[in-house]
Image (cartoon, rainbow, N blue to C red; front, side, top):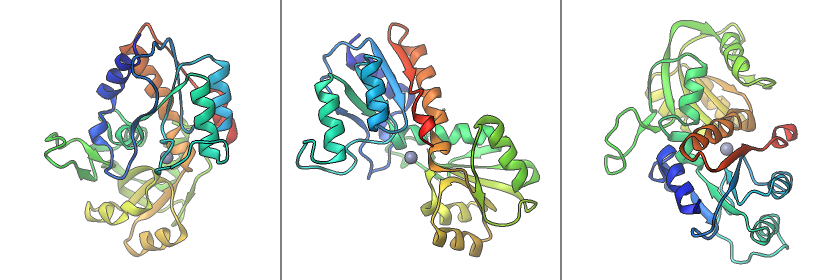
Length: 262
Ligand SMILES: [Zn+2]
């Protein structure tokens, strides 16, 4: 099928207008008129995942993190980013990144994490501008209430049952109980004040800095960090499943090597 057809399917799963304004989502490398028979999802395009994509003979890599992310003025093998882009282009591989569009999507990463925690009355931490969407259930991040207060240890248990082998870190004691949790996958420390405004007493994210953890403590928010990779990589399997359902003729796989890096 045409690459355009695949891009339309991805757009219906994670509309690009849901992405943050600073992001670089969508097709970053590729010819929209090329035929695509195989696609692979992964969290990040690296030497490992690109080699796997070449070995799997895919024509499209859907990597969560955009590459290039920041503007570049040369594409050569002198830089890590340039080297990956040159290799992908030489191998005839298109690159697409949904990034924050997938974080924020209706069935996206933050929504999936909310379900793992069994949160109720889930809402976005920040709704979209009405020019983007008037659906008040959609927006940046998520937060919700636990039906009964639970300990940080119980939250980690719920996450671990869905994402095996997580190495979590947290502020506060493991038996500290919380009842309203904010969720931002990846690096969510900058969204703390928003979580505080929504009355959250806990925040689940991938990673946060020392100073963000101190800020969380001063706001009365317990910070749970499950690792950037762990907080997002599971969702690239889900994205592959959703894309496969919409494009039965395309063979969609997920990187099998990436998780071994973390
Ligand atoms: Zn990320």
